[in-house]
Amino acid sequence: MRTLRRLKFMSSPSLSDLGKREQAALDERGTQQRRACSNATWNSIHNGVIAVFQRKGLPDHELYNLNEGVRQLLKTELGSFFTEYLQNQLLTKGMVILRDKIRFYEVYKLGGVDLGRSLLRN
Image (cartoon, rainbow, N blue to C red; front, side, top):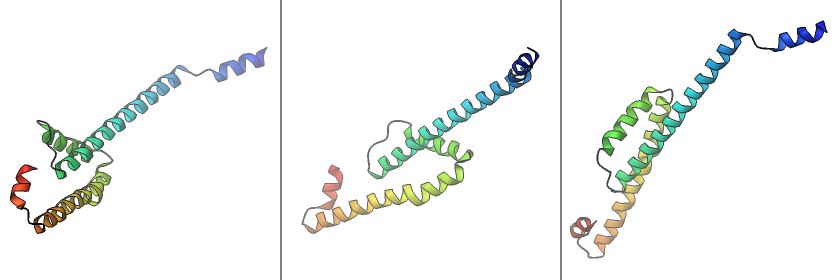
């Protein structure tokens, strides 16, 4: 009987352990929420930058929101990684989009169509 009580007592958490576990769980939830927010911001910036290069219109105040999103991401632990991604991946992808459009319009112009009129229509 004494052994059973001792095992039961040793396996039950102390009150101080409960507080630590709850705090650890709250910290983990906070970290997950920050990551989710960072992912949403990251996706928003990615889509916004691509939309700019594709000459799609941005909604009102979207450019401001993208700028603020970049500022917030740069303050996180992902900041340096995001900077590298922005420079090496996203802006490169945007430049490829622009290059392809330039090539398309150069071919279009060689075909005898006025480039100025075609650009105004798009």
